[in-house]
Length: 320
Length: 320
Image (tube, rainbow over all chains, first blue to last red; front, side):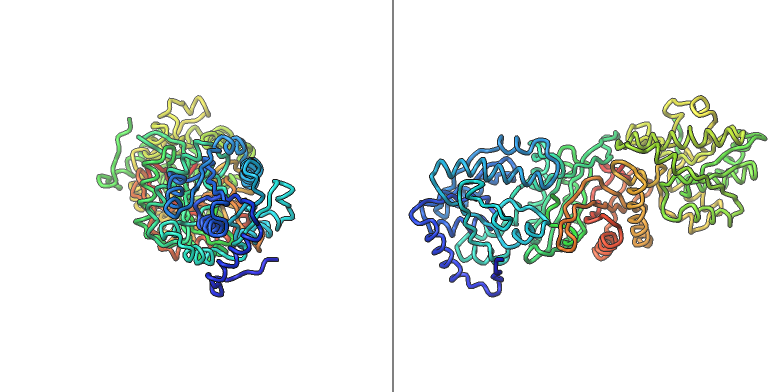
């Protein structure tokens, strides 16, 4: 059982120095590897790890082919300015091969997990002789995994899986007592730039969690194009999270007076403090119309767009 | 090529006496059968046919298992008050058998068509020695079928199909020069009660057009329950049409803290004059929330609800 530190009771200065000390003690004079996705959680862990280990922390960004448009360049650029070198590893082939033919959401998350942890990090850690992997797991991930709601891509010990045995390295999870709002406070205190810090949450399995049904390069490209539009038009809403989801269902449409049997994009935009509960943002209809028109015009194959109106629970933030 | 009569130029009195005369002349001293679905089109045709043929028109309501809650009782009751006897024929088994295993929208519409026209009406017309079937086809149905957007369930001659040859009877389509707004004017003039006349349009394949994927009694029951809620909460909006659509895609949800891998209902509510183009109604968020909460609470298996925000075109009014 992990005891929660709420954002209210969190003393960021004490928290940071305690975690830096813990990481130092755990890793000793060895090295550690750190997976940076560009989200608030992994960015905060990167800063904590960098403060504790300096050059002995190897920070990698896995280009899994499932990230948003321009994401790797952007993330590398952000951290370059902060003095942290990020290594980009192209693993697109591995991920799409692992995901081919899978439609079940849990199997999909499992395929991403296995490719990340066994194939990629197993190899990276072995090559670098590191014994530790830093991870941005937060308490909400643990709750939902233990409750059986979702299989997060980065929760092992809580499920009785020994990563040392399964993958050949130990995992350090310095944010595991916090929820999203606490992580944001720590990230701010560690000097993450507002631009990066204000990025909306993005799931571990990345755009694979935004595709219902099989994940293919083409379907990821479709949801990536829709995501660009959704993020651009909703970035000033102040919402907790917003996303485009590609459905597998086919719906009847028409173009140039002919039937066009096409696909649907669902948009979700959430109001939430800590992701445990959430309600759809009351977007102005003008915004909803603009979203629909741009997606229909610019994303090939899309004839229909919907907006989520159900709260969490019983919905979840992501659809997969 | 059929020449359109617009609602503006329509003289309802002349139109009605002309059509009554045409029906009388066509049927002579024989009899005709008339398929009443309870929609504005078929209700208007029923009144025209009744005026022309009186007791020589046999009006049947096919209980295909795909209608809305309480629909057959309601329709029979409406027409009883107007002096028109409606015969209800239970054909649920035939329809579900014809639809079993079919997921393609066109094949689904075709299965409904074949069951309606060959199995049901072929039999009814033969038994009754009628040579004519009255049909509520309107010009929009013809346009969309000829253009290949949708296969309407009641358009034959325009596709080069001879119903006499294919089904053993002739079809009379007195509303074929009109669009929806024109039909409403004629229906009013024929004395249809406001209650029936104000019913929103409902497609020929009924709730089978509101289910993406296979049509089963259970899936029809799900969308029927959602339809009751949508129609109740949106009936005072003045919208052109509104509906619930059951998706086939599964989405992750949670109930009682556990994962509940469930289904999604999409709501569509349209502003339109003649169904050729349409835009989503700008419903207040309060209404959208109420819709979502009621559907999630009362319809088993539903964890997610969306609202359509795309216009027609490139969307169509119905999803199937």
